[in-house]
Length: 168
Image (cartoon, rainbow, N blue to C red; front, top):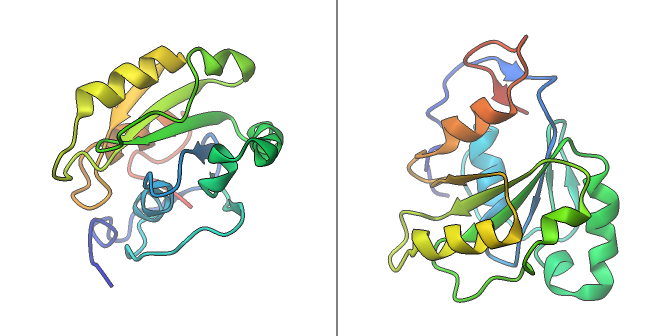
């Protein structure tokens, strides 16, 4: 089990009412690890087999993004969220999302570049892909070092949340 960024949050209060985020991306894009890091959990490998519906984060299997017949489930769960997060790994060789795909969702769509600390990371390419998709804001991050996670949390935070509150 890897320590990663998960234990750094200490005893910070949790966010109970911040905007709900759904994470979508291909297999191994880093959605589950990002979910664990945002929730302050210990980082460990866990293959997502079904949609995991936490209080403030919806984690989806990569197959739902890659297989067209499963894509309808993502469309339905997007309506359960306040913000849609398209996740692309910084070292991915291609983008699974089509250009201008964000216009199909009536929610704000943010781009998340995961694994910026990986060898072979090409943050600029991932950012270009997410801009081409139509993402309103783009957040480069690393679940293992914690870089960029605070910006995502701040973006999702509601005005009445504690300043150091975390998603649950």
